[in-house]
Every structure is written in structure tokens, then in C-alpha cells.
Amino acid sequence: MVSFIRRRPWEIRESAATPEALFFDRRQVLAGLGGAVAAGGLIGAGAIGSSRAAFAAGGPIDDLFPPKRNEAFKLDRALTPEAANGSYNNFYEFGFDKGIADRAAKLKPFPWSVTIDGLCNKPQKLDAVELIRKMPIEERLYRHRCVEAWSMTIPWTGFPLAELVKLADPKPEAKYLRMETFLDPKIAVMQAQTWYPWPYVEGLTLAEATNDLAFIAIGAYGKPLPNQHGAPLRLSVPWKYGFKSIKSIVKFSFVKERPKSYWEGLQASEYGFWANVNPAVPHPRWSQATERVLGTPDTVPTQIYNGYGEQVAGLYKDLAGERLFM
Image (cartoon, rainbow, N blue to C red; front, side, top):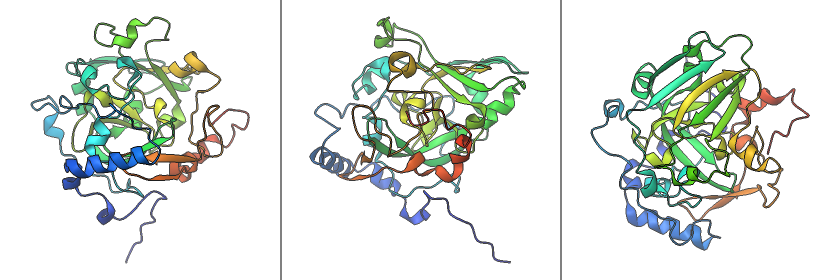
């Protein structure tokens, strides 16, 4: 019997993915970035920072790379060149500009303690390497859409967040997963600014956390995660705006009440709990109808739920009163 695999909306054939050799062609990368500047320029002077400390060899999880790719998760556009991806980053603990790779090099991702607590039957504190080695590691190709109206496409390595939820065995009264990043103002310069609501906190409903797409990344481009991407553990929820994808996580807490995220605490009128991508709902200060594709000269229409609506729209069918797209 011949079986037919129905492609998801974002999928293309393997042959359409950017060849790995292209990631390392600096001239093509810079040409693409130059085009992005000419096209209207979210990438400005000084944005291309150094990422020289991104992939230090000899780490405790190097043997997990390169991972096997999960062919169910593909893309409808080429991957973002690695050099562009590694040098244009939001990591507010290290500054509000994009060229934070050198500053993030101060972060020491190993050893790294991870706490799983709250309303769960198996609370525990363990090293990140121990946690990672309990998990099924794979590569997935994902879109990433920033609330600032730029986008990337990234080959993440990691494991389904649902596997961590299963490890914790949440109690029936647990409704949300609260996540928290590290707090160390000695290395994260912005955390010394006490008027910001540090540490960075994010949250998902348990239904979102156990959705097929919710992913904990430990690497990118076939290598361990660079510091500027949130080593050693960062969230990727590709149907939501990028600020939901919390970096350098130290705590996963199962809670009954909806947690207040960092950006809600900072500016609730502009950044809400749900933060699902919707081109029809503008940010109060700019349109979300289109996005600049970093590493290229292209501006393209934004898709509802960032193109993942088939997989996630059902999570929100009974939430008509919520501000789902802020």
C-alpha cells in the first residue's frame, strides 16, 4: 500500500532547504544583510556583532550533535544564514540593542542548575546536562517571528516541552507552566537596573506547553546553543511572538494562577500573556501585517499564528474575551 503524507502549511521538500555550505558563505550573508538594510532596515549600523564565543568546542553535550532531523517540521522559506542569526539577537539581560553576542559571552551555561517545582508529583533539582540526557533530542526547522516585525527561520536542536511536563507529572490543579530565567547582575548588565521586573518570567497554559510545537532548544545549526540564543535551555513557541520564547531558563514551575510575564509587568497595554501572531492586529505603535525576513532583502506578508494555525488555533476556540494577539 502506498501511503501519502499530508504536508503541514509551512512545509517544503527537503531539497528546498538552504544547503549547510551556504550558512558559512560570509559574502552571501553580508550581501543579504545589506539588502535588508536597503529594504527598510531593521538591521542598522553596528547590528552585525561578533558571535565568536557562540560555539565553543569541548562542551558537555557536544556528542549530541549533529542531531537527527524530525522531518515533520519543515519550512516554506530558506533558513536564515547562521552568521545573521547569531549576530542579531534580543536578550534584554545583556542590553536592549541587537549586538549583544560579546556581552552574552560572560554567561556560563555549564554547569547550570534547573529546578522543576510547584504543583507536580515529581519536583526535582538537577543539572541541565542531566535533564537534557533524559530527553529525546532532535532537530526541527522553525519560523521565528519577532513582535518588532522581523523574522528568521532556524534549525533548532532540542526536545518537546511536553517531555519535560511528563517528567514533572503535574497535579490536576496545575493549569500553567511558569518559566524563569537566571538572575545575576554581575554578568547581565541590565539586571542591575532595578526598575525593570527581573528576572525574566514567561508562562504558557499546560495545553500550550504540551502542544506538539512547543520546544526546548539546546542547540542551533547542528551545534550547541550559543549564549546569545539563551544557552543552555531556551523555549521556542513558533506561533507566538518571539518575546514569549524565554532564554537561559533556570526554573519550570507548575502553578494554578496565570503568571505575569516580564513584558506584561513592564508594559501590559502593549504586551500580553498570549502574544499569538496575527497580521490583522497591529502593535499600538506599528503594523504587524508584514515582516522583514532577516538575511534577505525580502518583506513578506505575516500569517496568522505565524503559519501554524492548523496546529494551534484550536487551543483558543473558547477564549473569545481574551486579548490573544497582544
